[in-house]
Image (tube, rainbow, N blue to C red; front, side):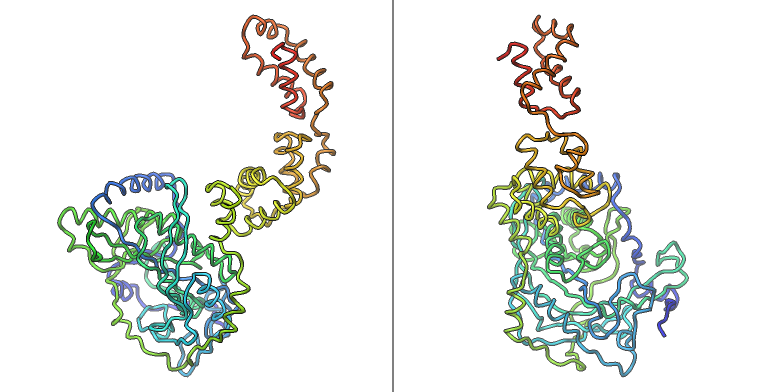
Length: 540
Protein backbone atom coordinates (compact mmCIF):
# COMPACT_ATOMS: atom_id res chain seq x y z
CA UNK A 1 0.00 0.00 0.00
CA UNK A 2 1.47 3.34 -1.05
CA UNK A 3 2.08 5.79 1.76
CA UNK A 4 -0.06 8.78 0.85
CA UNK A 5 1.14 10.82 3.82
CA UNK A 6 4.67 12.22 4.02
CA UNK A 7 6.84 10.87 6.83
CA UNK A 8 8.21 13.00 9.67
CA UNK A 9 11.98 12.80 9.96
CA UNK A 10 12.64 14.21 13.40
CA UNK A 11 13.11 17.61 14.91
CA UNK A 12 14.13 20.65 12.98
CA UNK A 13 17.12 21.15 15.31
CA UNK A 14 18.82 17.96 14.14
CA UNK A 15 18.58 19.03 10.51
CA UNK A 16 19.82 22.54 11.23
CA UNK A 17 22.88 21.06 12.92
CA UNK A 18 23.53 18.92 9.86
CA UNK A 19 23.80 21.96 7.58
CA UNK A 20 25.37 24.27 10.19
CA UNK A 21 23.18 27.11 8.89
CA UNK A 22 19.50 27.16 7.88
CA UNK A 23 18.88 26.16 4.29
CA UNK A 24 16.76 28.15 1.90
CA UNK A 25 13.44 26.32 1.44
CA UNK A 26 12.61 24.75 -1.88
CA UNK A 27 9.58 27.04 -1.99
CA UNK A 28 12.05 29.84 -2.66
CA UNK A 29 12.37 28.34 -6.14
CA UNK A 30 8.93 29.76 -6.90
CA UNK A 31 10.09 33.37 -6.45
CA UNK A 32 10.32 35.36 -9.68
CA UNK A 33 12.30 38.46 -10.43
CA UNK A 34 10.34 41.66 -9.75
CA UNK A 35 11.18 44.98 -11.34
CA UNK A 36 13.15 45.96 -8.23
CA UNK A 37 15.17 42.76 -8.43
CA UNK A 38 15.76 43.38 -12.12
CA UNK A 39 17.19 46.79 -11.26
CA UNK A 40 19.48 45.15 -8.68
CA UNK A 41 20.67 42.74 -11.37
CA UNK A 42 21.38 45.60 -13.75
CA UNK A 43 23.27 47.41 -10.99
CA UNK A 44 25.32 44.32 -10.12
CA UNK A 45 26.05 43.44 -13.76
CA UNK A 46 27.17 46.99 -14.53
CA UNK A 47 29.92 46.67 -11.91
CA UNK A 48 31.37 43.48 -13.41
CA UNK A 49 33.55 45.03 -16.17
CA UNK A 50 35.40 47.32 -13.73
CA UNK A 51 35.70 44.52 -11.13
CA UNK A 52 37.34 42.25 -13.71
CA UNK A 53 39.91 44.76 -14.96
CA UNK A 54 42.52 43.34 -12.58
CA UNK A 55 40.89 39.96 -11.84
CA UNK A 56 39.61 37.03 -13.84
CA UNK A 57 36.66 34.84 -12.89
CA UNK A 58 36.86 31.08 -13.48
CA UNK A 59 33.51 29.32 -13.67
CA UNK A 60 32.45 25.69 -14.07
CA UNK A 61 28.94 24.25 -14.04
CA UNK A 62 27.57 20.95 -12.76
CA UNK A 63 24.18 20.19 -14.32
CA UNK A 64 21.75 17.50 -13.16
CA UNK A 65 19.33 16.47 -15.90
CA UNK A 66 16.25 14.59 -14.72
CA UNK A 67 15.40 12.04 -17.40
CA UNK A 68 11.91 11.63 -18.81
CA UNK A 69 11.70 7.88 -18.38
CA UNK A 70 8.43 6.21 -17.37
CA UNK A 71 10.06 4.51 -14.39
CA UNK A 72 12.93 5.15 -12.00
CA UNK A 73 16.60 4.29 -12.56
CA UNK A 74 16.82 1.06 -10.56
CA UNK A 75 13.24 -0.06 -9.85
CA UNK A 76 9.82 -0.19 -11.50
CA UNK A 77 8.24 2.76 -9.64
CA UNK A 78 6.75 5.51 -11.74
CA UNK A 79 8.93 8.55 -12.33
CA UNK A 80 6.03 11.00 -12.06
CA UNK A 81 6.25 14.72 -11.34
CA UNK A 82 3.60 16.12 -8.98
CA UNK A 83 2.20 12.81 -7.66
CA UNK A 84 0.87 12.44 -4.10
CA UNK A 85 3.77 12.29 -1.58
CA UNK A 86 5.25 8.80 -1.18
CA UNK A 87 2.84 7.24 -3.67
CA UNK A 88 5.58 6.10 -6.09
CA UNK A 89 7.88 4.16 -3.76
CA UNK A 90 8.98 0.57 -3.19
CA UNK A 91 11.57 -1.29 -1.05
CA UNK A 92 14.32 -0.50 -3.60
CA UNK A 93 13.93 3.30 -3.72
CA UNK A 94 13.19 3.38 0.03
CA UNK A 95 16.48 1.61 0.73
CA UNK A 96 14.99 -1.30 2.68
CA UNK A 97 17.31 -4.21 3.58
CA UNK A 98 17.53 -6.96 1.01
CA UNK A 99 16.16 -4.91 -1.91
CA UNK A 100 18.28 -5.12 -5.07
CA UNK A 101 18.51 -2.54 -7.88
CA UNK A 102 17.88 -3.41 -11.55
CA UNK A 103 19.15 -0.92 -14.16
CA UNK A 104 16.59 0.77 -16.42
CA UNK A 105 17.85 0.19 -19.98
CA UNK A 106 16.17 3.37 -21.19
CA UNK A 107 18.46 5.39 -18.92
CA UNK A 108 21.48 3.98 -20.72
CA UNK A 109 20.04 4.89 -24.14
CA UNK A 110 19.41 8.46 -22.96
CA UNK A 111 22.94 8.71 -21.55
CA UNK A 112 24.42 7.58 -24.87
CA UNK A 113 22.25 10.11 -26.73
CA UNK A 114 23.42 12.98 -24.55
CA UNK A 115 27.05 11.87 -24.67
CA UNK A 116 27.00 11.82 -28.45
CA UNK A 117 25.19 15.18 -28.66
CA UNK A 118 27.90 16.69 -26.42
CA UNK A 119 30.68 15.33 -28.65
CA UNK A 120 31.94 13.03 -25.87
CA UNK A 121 34.06 9.90 -26.00
CA UNK A 122 31.82 7.05 -24.83
CA UNK A 123 33.05 4.38 -22.43
CA UNK A 124 31.97 1.06 -23.92
CA UNK A 125 32.69 -0.45 -20.49
CA UNK A 126 31.78 1.53 -17.39
CA UNK A 127 30.54 0.78 -13.88
CA UNK A 128 28.45 2.09 -11.00
CA UNK A 129 29.73 3.24 -7.62
CA UNK A 130 28.30 4.09 -4.22
CA UNK A 131 28.65 7.71 -3.14
CA UNK A 132 28.27 7.86 0.64
CA UNK A 133 26.68 10.86 2.32
CA UNK A 134 23.83 11.57 4.69
CA UNK A 135 20.82 13.61 3.71
CA UNK A 136 17.55 13.22 5.54
CA UNK A 137 15.87 12.60 2.18
CA UNK A 138 18.41 9.98 0.99
CA UNK A 139 17.00 6.77 2.51
CA UNK A 140 19.89 4.42 1.67
CA UNK A 141 22.57 6.67 3.11
CA UNK A 142 24.36 6.47 -0.24
CA UNK A 143 23.67 7.33 -3.87
CA UNK A 144 24.26 5.03 -6.82
CA UNK A 145 26.46 7.04 -9.20
CA UNK A 146 29.55 6.66 -11.41
CA UNK A 147 32.96 7.71 -10.13
CA UNK A 148 36.14 6.90 -12.01
CA UNK A 149 34.66 5.43 -15.21
CA UNK A 150 31.71 7.59 -16.35
CA UNK A 151 29.70 6.61 -19.40
CA UNK A 152 30.93 9.67 -21.35
CA UNK A 153 33.78 12.19 -21.09
CA UNK A 154 35.98 14.68 -22.94
CA UNK A 155 33.23 16.48 -24.86
CA UNK A 156 32.29 20.03 -25.81
CA UNK A 157 29.31 22.29 -26.41
CA UNK A 158 29.04 25.44 -28.55
CA UNK A 159 27.14 28.55 -27.49
CA UNK A 160 26.15 31.82 -29.16
CA UNK A 161 25.95 34.73 -26.72
CA UNK A 162 22.99 37.15 -26.91
CA UNK A 163 23.47 40.14 -29.20
CA UNK A 164 22.60 42.53 -26.37
CA UNK A 165 25.64 41.22 -24.45
CA UNK A 166 27.96 41.76 -27.38
CA UNK A 167 27.31 38.45 -29.12
CA UNK A 168 30.10 36.05 -29.99
CA UNK A 169 30.60 32.31 -30.34
CA UNK A 170 32.01 30.19 -27.51
CA UNK A 171 33.06 26.56 -27.14
CA UNK A 172 33.13 25.07 -23.65
CA UNK A 173 34.63 21.74 -22.64
CA UNK A 174 32.65 18.92 -21.03
CA UNK A 175 34.63 16.93 -18.48
CA UNK A 176 32.19 14.05 -18.06
CA UNK A 177 28.61 12.82 -18.18
CA UNK A 178 27.59 10.15 -15.70
CA UNK A 179 24.45 8.29 -14.60
CA UNK A 180 23.14 8.56 -11.05
CA UNK A 181 19.91 8.54 -9.05
CA UNK A 182 18.16 11.46 -7.40
CA UNK A 183 17.44 11.91 -3.68
CA UNK A 184 13.99 12.55 -2.21
CA UNK A 185 12.58 15.91 -1.18
CA UNK A 186 12.11 17.59 2.21
CA UNK A 187 8.98 19.60 2.98
CA UNK A 188 9.34 21.84 6.03
CA UNK A 189 6.16 22.08 8.12
CA UNK A 190 5.22 25.37 9.77
CA UNK A 191 7.54 28.33 9.95
CA UNK A 192 6.26 29.65 6.63
CA UNK A 193 7.84 26.71 4.79
CA UNK A 194 11.33 27.63 6.06
CA UNK A 195 13.62 25.14 7.75
CA UNK A 196 14.36 27.74 10.41
CA UNK A 197 11.40 27.79 12.79
CA UNK A 198 9.80 24.60 11.46
CA UNK A 199 8.82 22.17 14.26
CA UNK A 200 9.50 19.20 11.98
CA UNK A 201 10.18 18.28 8.35
CA UNK A 202 8.44 15.79 6.08
CA UNK A 203 10.10 13.50 3.56
CA UNK A 204 8.64 12.76 0.14
CA UNK A 205 10.49 9.84 -1.46
CA UNK A 206 8.75 9.99 -4.83
CA UNK A 207 11.87 11.56 -6.33
CA UNK A 208 14.29 9.10 -4.69
CA UNK A 209 15.72 6.89 -7.42
CA UNK A 210 14.57 9.07 -10.33
CA UNK A 211 17.27 8.83 -13.03
CA UNK A 212 19.70 11.71 -13.51
CA UNK A 213 22.53 12.49 -15.87
CA UNK A 214 25.13 14.78 -14.35
CA UNK A 215 27.09 16.93 -16.79
CA UNK A 216 30.32 18.42 -15.44
CA UNK A 217 31.83 21.22 -17.51
CA UNK A 218 35.43 22.29 -17.72
CA UNK A 219 36.13 25.59 -15.89
CA UNK A 220 36.08 27.41 -19.22
CA UNK A 221 33.57 30.19 -18.51
CA UNK A 222 34.66 33.66 -17.46
CA UNK A 223 31.39 35.59 -17.01
CA UNK A 224 27.93 35.06 -15.62
CA UNK A 225 26.31 35.43 -19.03
CA UNK A 226 28.57 32.73 -20.49
CA UNK A 227 27.56 30.30 -17.73
CA UNK A 228 23.88 31.20 -18.08
CA UNK A 229 23.98 30.65 -21.85
CA UNK A 230 25.83 27.36 -21.33
CA UNK A 231 22.97 26.18 -19.07
CA UNK A 232 20.39 27.38 -21.59
CA UNK A 233 22.14 25.46 -24.38
CA UNK A 234 22.24 22.28 -22.27
CA UNK A 235 18.49 22.67 -21.71
CA UNK A 236 17.94 23.12 -25.47
CA UNK A 237 19.93 19.98 -26.23
CA UNK A 238 18.03 17.96 -23.60
CA UNK A 239 14.66 19.05 -25.02
CA UNK A 240 15.82 18.54 -28.60
CA UNK A 241 16.88 14.96 -27.83
CA UNK A 242 13.58 14.26 -26.06
CA UNK A 243 15.30 12.85 -22.98
CA UNK A 244 13.78 15.28 -20.46
CA UNK A 245 11.79 18.49 -20.08
CA UNK A 246 14.92 20.56 -19.36
CA UNK A 247 12.92 22.87 -17.08
CA UNK A 248 14.84 24.70 -14.36
CA UNK A 249 11.57 26.07 -12.94
CA UNK A 250 10.27 22.53 -12.35
CA UNK A 251 13.62 21.35 -11.03
CA UNK A 252 14.06 18.80 -13.82
CA UNK A 253 17.28 20.59 -14.79
CA UNK A 254 19.36 21.87 -11.88
CA UNK A 255 22.65 23.73 -12.12
CA UNK A 256 25.30 24.24 -9.45
CA UNK A 257 28.08 26.65 -10.35
CA UNK A 258 31.65 26.76 -9.08
CA UNK A 259 33.11 30.27 -9.02
CA UNK A 260 36.59 31.49 -8.20
CA UNK A 261 38.58 34.62 -9.03
CA UNK A 262 42.29 35.17 -9.49
CA UNK A 263 44.51 38.14 -10.33
CA UNK A 264 44.95 38.48 -14.09
CA UNK A 265 48.06 36.68 -15.25
CA UNK A 266 48.01 34.17 -12.38
CA UNK A 267 47.99 30.56 -13.62
CA UNK A 268 46.76 28.91 -10.42
CA UNK A 269 43.04 28.85 -9.73
CA UNK A 270 41.60 30.69 -6.75
CA UNK A 271 39.52 28.99 -4.04
CA UNK A 272 36.27 27.87 -5.63
CA UNK A 273 32.86 28.39 -4.09
CA UNK A 274 29.83 26.32 -5.09
CA UNK A 275 26.47 28.08 -5.53
CA UNK A 276 23.12 26.26 -5.41
CA UNK A 277 19.39 27.13 -5.45
CA UNK A 278 19.07 28.87 -8.83
CA UNK A 279 15.80 28.25 -10.65
CA UNK A 280 16.51 29.99 -13.97
CA UNK A 281 19.35 30.99 -16.26
CA UNK A 282 18.73 34.62 -15.31
CA UNK A 283 19.14 33.69 -11.62
CA UNK A 284 22.42 31.94 -12.49
CA UNK A 285 23.64 35.12 -14.17
CA UNK A 286 22.76 37.24 -11.14
CA UNK A 287 24.19 34.77 -8.62
CA UNK A 288 27.51 34.49 -10.44
CA UNK A 289 27.84 38.25 -10.85
CA UNK A 290 27.18 38.73 -7.13
CA UNK A 291 29.70 36.06 -6.15
CA UNK A 292 32.37 37.50 -8.46
CA UNK A 293 31.93 40.94 -6.90
CA UNK A 294 32.02 39.46 -3.38
CA UNK A 295 35.27 37.59 -4.01
CA UNK A 296 36.93 40.49 -5.85
CA UNK A 297 36.06 42.81 -2.94
CA UNK A 298 37.73 40.40 -0.48
CA UNK A 299 40.84 40.23 -2.69
CA UNK A 300 41.07 44.01 -2.89
CA UNK A 301 40.80 44.28 0.90
CA UNK A 302 43.56 41.70 1.38
CA UNK A 303 41.08 39.24 2.87
CA UNK A 304 41.29 36.51 0.22
CA UNK A 305 41.88 33.99 3.05
CA UNK A 306 38.21 34.57 3.95
CA UNK A 307 37.24 32.88 0.67
CA UNK A 308 36.84 29.24 1.70
CA UNK A 309 35.73 26.15 -0.19
CA UNK A 310 32.07 26.02 0.70
CA UNK A 311 28.56 25.66 -0.66
CA UNK A 312 26.54 28.86 -0.76
CA UNK A 313 22.86 29.36 -1.54
CA UNK A 314 21.47 32.01 -3.84
CA UNK A 315 18.76 34.02 -2.10
CA UNK A 316 16.48 35.33 -4.83
CA UNK A 317 14.67 37.70 -2.49
CA UNK A 318 17.77 39.49 -1.21
CA UNK A 319 19.82 38.93 -4.40
CA UNK A 320 22.85 37.54 -2.57
CA UNK A 321 24.65 34.29 -1.80
CA UNK A 322 24.79 32.99 1.79
CA UNK A 323 26.78 30.18 3.41
CA UNK A 324 25.03 26.80 3.50
CA UNK A 325 27.75 24.35 4.55
CA UNK A 326 31.40 23.47 4.16
CA UNK A 327 32.00 21.71 0.83
CA UNK A 328 32.66 17.99 0.97
CA UNK A 329 35.80 16.60 -0.64
CA UNK A 330 36.09 13.35 -2.60
CA UNK A 331 37.39 11.55 0.48
CA UNK A 332 34.19 12.43 2.36
CA UNK A 333 32.12 10.49 -0.16
CA UNK A 334 34.07 7.21 0.34
CA UNK A 335 33.33 5.94 -3.17
CA UNK A 336 33.53 2.22 -3.83
CA UNK A 337 32.15 -0.01 -6.65
CA UNK A 338 28.42 -0.78 -6.39
CA UNK A 339 28.35 -4.51 -5.49
CA UNK A 340 24.71 -5.06 -6.53
CA UNK A 341 25.10 -3.97 -10.18
CA UNK A 342 27.10 -5.55 -12.98
CA UNK A 343 29.55 -3.72 -15.20
CA UNK A 344 27.78 -1.60 -17.83
CA UNK A 345 28.78 -2.78 -21.31
CA UNK A 346 27.76 -0.95 -24.50
CA UNK A 347 27.83 -2.54 -27.94
CA UNK A 348 29.23 -0.44 -30.79
CA UNK A 349 26.23 -1.24 -33.00
CA UNK A 350 23.94 0.13 -30.26
CA UNK A 351 25.95 3.35 -30.16
CA UNK A 352 25.98 3.64 -33.98
CA UNK A 353 22.21 3.11 -34.17
CA UNK A 354 21.56 5.90 -31.62
CA UNK A 355 24.03 8.22 -33.37
CA UNK A 356 22.32 7.79 -36.75
CA UNK A 357 18.93 8.68 -35.22
CA UNK A 358 20.10 11.92 -33.56
CA UNK A 359 18.06 14.98 -34.62
CA UNK A 360 19.53 18.26 -35.82
CA UNK A 361 20.95 19.87 -32.68
CA UNK A 362 20.38 23.52 -31.70
CA UNK A 363 23.87 24.67 -32.71
CA UNK A 364 23.48 22.96 -36.10
CA UNK A 365 20.15 24.75 -36.58
CA UNK A 366 21.76 28.12 -35.80
CA UNK A 367 24.58 27.52 -38.27
CA UNK A 368 22.05 26.55 -40.96
CA UNK A 369 20.01 29.71 -40.36
CA UNK A 370 23.18 31.80 -40.50
CA UNK A 371 23.99 30.26 -43.87
CA UNK A 372 20.51 31.26 -45.10
CA UNK A 373 21.40 34.89 -44.39
CA UNK A 374 19.32 35.54 -41.26
CA UNK A 375 20.70 38.02 -38.73
CA UNK A 376 22.12 36.59 -35.52
CA UNK A 377 19.25 38.15 -33.54
CA UNK A 378 16.74 36.27 -35.74
CA UNK A 379 18.82 33.10 -35.55
CA UNK A 380 18.88 33.10 -31.75
CA UNK A 381 15.12 33.63 -31.46
CA UNK A 382 14.06 31.08 -34.08
CA UNK A 383 16.48 28.36 -32.97
CA UNK A 384 15.79 28.77 -29.24
CA UNK A 385 12.84 26.35 -29.29
CA UNK A 386 12.80 23.25 -31.48
CA UNK A 387 9.05 23.47 -32.10
CA UNK A 388 9.45 27.08 -33.31
CA UNK A 389 12.35 26.21 -35.62
CA UNK A 390 10.40 23.26 -37.06
CA UNK A 391 7.39 25.54 -37.66
CA UNK A 392 9.62 28.11 -39.37
CA UNK A 393 11.25 25.43 -41.53
CA UNK A 394 7.85 24.09 -42.57
CA UNK A 395 6.70 27.61 -43.49
CA UNK A 396 9.75 28.06 -45.73
CA UNK A 397 9.09 24.68 -47.34
CA UNK A 398 5.69 26.04 -48.37
CA UNK A 399 7.46 28.79 -50.34
CA UNK A 400 7.18 31.70 -47.89
CA UNK A 401 9.57 34.65 -48.07
CA UNK A 402 12.21 33.89 -45.43
CA UNK A 403 12.50 37.30 -43.78
CA UNK A 404 8.77 37.99 -43.83
CA UNK A 405 8.00 34.57 -42.32
CA UNK A 406 10.63 35.11 -39.63
CA UNK A 407 9.18 38.54 -38.77
CA UNK A 408 5.62 37.21 -38.47
CA UNK A 409 6.69 34.30 -36.25
CA UNK A 410 8.96 36.41 -34.02
CA UNK A 411 6.57 39.36 -33.92
CA UNK A 412 2.80 39.00 -34.01
CA UNK A 413 2.58 35.23 -33.50
CA UNK A 414 5.02 35.23 -30.56
CA UNK A 415 3.22 38.21 -28.99
CA UNK A 416 -0.12 36.38 -29.26
CA UNK A 417 1.36 33.21 -27.74
CA UNK A 418 2.78 35.15 -24.78
CA UNK A 419 -0.50 36.95 -24.14
CA UNK A 420 -2.54 33.75 -24.29
CA UNK A 421 0.15 31.63 -22.57
CA UNK A 422 0.25 29.15 -25.46
CA UNK A 423 3.01 27.34 -27.32
CA UNK A 424 3.34 27.32 -31.09
CA UNK A 425 2.07 23.72 -31.16
CA UNK A 426 -1.28 25.03 -29.82
CA UNK A 427 -2.01 27.41 -32.71
CA UNK A 428 -4.39 26.45 -35.51
CA UNK A 429 -2.63 28.47 -38.20
CA UNK A 430 -0.59 25.87 -40.04
CA UNK A 431 2.77 26.65 -41.69
CA UNK A 432 1.07 26.43 -45.10
CA UNK A 433 -1.53 29.05 -44.11
CA UNK A 434 1.17 31.37 -42.72
CA UNK A 435 3.03 30.96 -46.02
CA UNK A 436 -0.22 31.83 -47.83
CA UNK A 437 -0.69 34.95 -45.67
CA UNK A 438 2.90 36.08 -46.32
CA UNK A 439 2.43 35.54 -50.06
CA UNK A 440 -0.81 37.57 -50.12
CA UNK A 441 0.93 40.48 -48.42
CA UNK A 442 3.99 40.25 -50.62
CA UNK A 443 2.03 40.28 -53.90
CA UNK A 444 -0.16 43.17 -52.75
CA UNK A 445 -3.45 41.25 -52.45
CA UNK A 446 -3.76 42.50 -48.87
CA UNK A 447 -1.82 44.97 -46.75
CA UNK A 448 0.24 44.14 -43.69
CA UNK A 449 -2.43 45.87 -41.61
CA UNK A 450 -5.11 43.49 -42.89
CA UNK A 451 -2.73 40.59 -42.23
CA UNK A 452 -2.45 41.66 -38.59
CA UNK A 453 -6.24 42.00 -38.41
CA UNK A 454 -6.99 38.46 -39.56
CA UNK A 455 -4.07 36.71 -37.85
CA UNK A 456 -5.77 36.22 -34.43
CA UNK A 457 -8.74 34.52 -36.11
CA UNK A 458 -6.43 32.23 -38.10
CA UNK A 459 -4.53 31.35 -34.89
CA UNK A 460 -7.74 30.64 -32.95
CA UNK A 461 -9.94 29.02 -35.58
CA UNK A 462 -7.74 27.93 -38.47
CA UNK A 463 -8.96 28.04 -42.06
CA UNK A 464 -7.18 29.65 -44.97
CA UNK A 465 -6.20 33.29 -45.28
CA UNK A 466 -8.28 33.75 -48.46
CA UNK A 467 -11.39 32.35 -46.78
CA UNK A 468 -11.13 34.81 -43.88
CA UNK A 469 -10.32 37.75 -46.18
CA UNK A 470 -13.32 37.05 -48.43
CA UNK A 471 -15.66 36.46 -45.48
CA UNK A 472 -14.70 39.82 -43.98
CA UNK A 473 -14.55 41.67 -47.31
CA UNK A 474 -10.95 42.64 -46.73
CA UNK A 475 -9.45 42.11 -50.19
CA UNK A 476 -6.97 44.90 -50.91
CA UNK A 477 -8.03 47.59 -53.35
CA UNK A 478 -5.38 47.61 -56.07
CA UNK A 479 -7.32 48.98 -59.05
CA UNK A 480 -5.73 52.33 -59.90
CA UNK A 481 -8.94 53.86 -61.25
CA UNK A 482 -10.83 52.94 -58.06
CA UNK A 483 -8.03 54.39 -55.95
CA UNK A 484 -8.08 57.61 -58.01
CA UNK A 485 -11.80 57.94 -57.29
CA UNK A 486 -11.15 57.51 -53.55
CA UNK A 487 -8.42 60.17 -53.60
CA UNK A 488 -10.67 62.62 -55.47
CA UNK A 489 -13.34 62.12 -52.82
CA UNK A 490 -10.88 62.82 -49.97
CA UNK A 491 -9.57 66.00 -51.67
CA UNK A 492 -13.09 67.20 -52.27
CA UNK A 493 -14.07 66.64 -48.62
CA UNK A 494 -11.02 68.52 -47.28
CA UNK A 495 -10.85 71.86 -49.20
CA UNK A 496 -9.12 73.83 -46.40
CA UNK A 497 -6.29 71.31 -46.16
CA UNK A 498 -6.00 71.21 -49.95
CA UNK A 499 -5.74 75.02 -50.09
CA UNK A 500 -3.09 74.99 -47.33
CA UNK A 501 -1.14 72.37 -49.28
CA UNK A 502 -1.16 74.55 -52.37
CA UNK A 503 0.25 77.41 -50.27
CA UNK A 504 3.28 75.35 -49.29
CA UNK A 505 2.28 73.06 -46.39
CA UNK A 506 3.53 69.97 -48.21
CA UNK A 507 3.48 67.85 -45.04
CA UNK A 508 -0.31 67.63 -45.55
CA UNK A 509 0.37 64.98 -48.18
CA UNK A 510 0.56 62.50 -45.31
CA UNK A 511 -2.81 63.75 -44.04
CA UNK A 512 -4.49 62.97 -47.35
CA UNK A 513 -2.87 59.55 -47.53
CA UNK A 514 -4.13 58.79 -44.03
CA UNK A 515 -7.67 59.87 -44.95
CA UNK A 516 -7.71 57.54 -47.96
CA UNK A 517 -6.39 54.67 -45.83
CA UNK A 518 -8.99 55.39 -43.14
CA UNK A 519 -11.86 55.55 -45.62
CA UNK A 520 -11.04 52.01 -46.79
CA UNK A 521 -10.25 50.56 -43.34
CA UNK A 522 -6.70 49.92 -44.49
CA UNK A 523 -7.72 47.92 -47.54
CA UNK A 524 -6.15 50.19 -50.15
CA UNK A 525 -2.80 49.21 -51.64
CA UNK A 526 -0.49 51.72 -49.86
CA UNK A 527 2.11 51.93 -52.64
CA UNK A 528 -0.42 52.59 -55.40
CA UNK A 529 -2.38 54.96 -53.17
CA UNK A 530 0.67 57.12 -52.40
CA UNK A 531 1.49 57.26 -56.12
CA UNK A 532 -2.04 58.42 -57.00
CA UNK A 533 -2.12 61.02 -54.18
CA UNK A 534 1.19 62.45 -55.42
CA UNK A 535 -0.20 62.65 -58.95
CA UNK A 536 -3.39 64.37 -57.84
CA UNK A 537 -1.40 66.91 -55.83
CA UNK A 538 0.80 67.66 -58.81
CA UNK A 539 3.97 66.18 -57.29
CA UNK A 540 4.67 63.73 -60.10
